[in-house]
Length: 277
Image 1 (cartoon, one colour):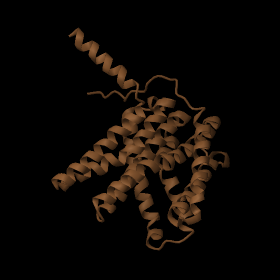
Image 2 (cartoon, one colour):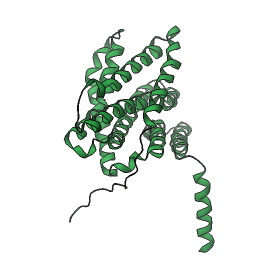
Image 3 (cartoon, helix red, strand yellow):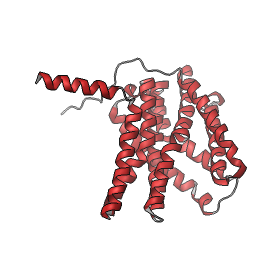
Image 4 (cartoon, one colour):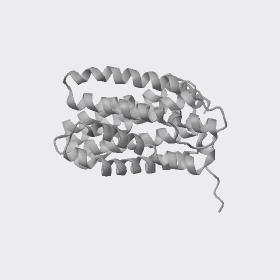
């Protein structure tokens, strides 16, 4: 028994050498890739939804883990609230985007890129905003950020699943390409933009002790919409528009890093509320 305990401690120390975000990325990405390979080798296509779900989680989960380890904001909100916000927040954002983005997808045009950015950046924070407005205790920067991140992750996962399922109509190879590209792109887009929106707004709310939609609370949203618009333009129109990609990425991570630097939760772990029988 003592030998087993020493072995487990040794394995634990070895695992800690790998950052948790990297472990999350490798595990989900590896599981998704293995599932795709098995499906192709066995022609058992019924397991493809597993690859779609787990592969869509890879990039967002890695990003969320990195932010949680850096700021400890995940400890500021009960796990059951985070899971509910992940599901409901992501689902509501997808529904809102599906309704208001439909016209653009049917007839693409230049101004639609700004509209998509506006709709998606607002939709990702609808549920966190409703929680913060309804419950004063969630208006701190740390708790608002925890809610915003999981809602944005929920949206990113569901959106990636939608794109991947659509790509399956073409081929499994196309679906694999979509999963890979989304795992790389999402941590540099949707998620940092939501972090910018939430930190800017919540900082102002905490200072005023109330939720407000003043310019000082909304400049982060304006920045995220602008960055999102330029990102969409560069990826869709391509050509010389590609010069915007490094510019958008640099500004995004510069602003994201600057704002995140001042956020850290030092309070006690918030456990789920006790249920009385």
